[in-house]
Amino acid sequence: MLDIVALANELGFSEAATISADDVVTSKELTSLCNPEACRQYGSCWTCQPAAGPFEQLQEHITSKDAGIVVQSIRDNVDFYEDWEILAETRASHNERLDRLAAAMREEFKDVMEFSTGGCDVCESCTYPDAPCRNPDTQRHSLSAHGVSVGSTCQRAGMDYSFENGRIRYIGMILYCN
Image 1 (spheres, rainbow, N blue to C red):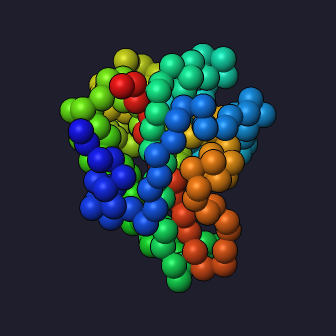
Image 2 (cartoon, helix red, strand yellow):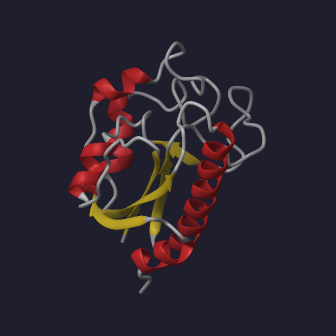
């Protein structure tokens, strides 16, 4: 049986913890942050709003799963307002590790669903809204679009999610059915 926490650690995540699907905290109000004034990803891909769908449908994506893992990539000595290249590099390496973890989990589990910060960028350019998703089985879903309270979910997983000067945290979550 795949030890997903050990694999997450091998891949280089700073933190990793298993959770049950019941430990994922969501709020319909959080999905209101997915709007054209607040998010540059809005309307840009199949996993962001408005394409992601209504909150009730998104909740089914989460509640239909059995368990999962929450992972963090932490980078220190970063100025959130000036170090754009470092932030982009950290996010890209975080998502690369997340994709590798999800791929390994797809070999072992059913109905694997991957979540990260921001919208899906698996493809160089998204087909939204002109054609169906090219990779529906490996797309990366938005935590925000699903209304996931990242701080509360991390807390339930026993992980710190505090904001600190000079430290950035990228969060990922993968849910699955046994």
